[in-house]
Length: 261
Image 1: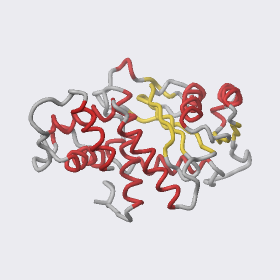
Image 2: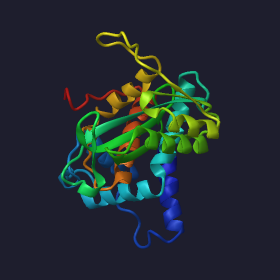
Image 3: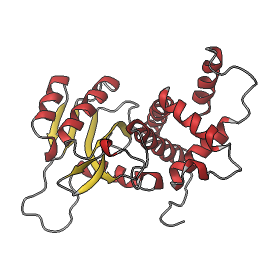
Image 4: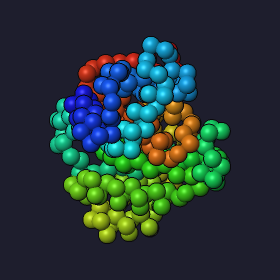
């Protein structure tokens, strides 16, 4: 991560956005503070005092989100991890799905909705991942937004950023409109259905990959529900969780998650 963060800081100073005395806080410590919030779920104001002041940590988090730093980190780490797994750096297929979560009191009522199927009031996270479960695109909306609408946005994002992707798998919530939109983009969207006669739990081919990704995200307590006032901050927290996951896998590090620590 260090080259990307250092280049970002140098560019800001070069553009006159950080004028004055040299930065007081090390970028590693600021990133540690931001990851601490994402991992433990604490409010920004409750950051331990051995980190940078919470105003500084949040200010960097907001600036990194606005300047696309988390997108850069996700892209670099995903490429490195795919190559470490013996895959091509760029994916050729993806899996789509959505997750509805409850929202906290921080989320404005106007930004929430009700997922009638799952009976959840809050927000919905639309994810597109590669066949390893690594994030390619994310969109956070009100829970009332349909999977089809979210899928159309995901396919547009993925097609633009990853032109090698020509195949996508999704559940029956993406019928018709998402399939047609994928066809216009040159992406074959295949619907994977549950066996009508199935009883009990059974892993559904391809779809289990993105379901596992949602499980990975739940290891970060900040994502147990949606605490962010703005949807783009929620998207940043999801990208940050994937940065944490991929960096730990690349360095063979392991950390107890919040459920067992």
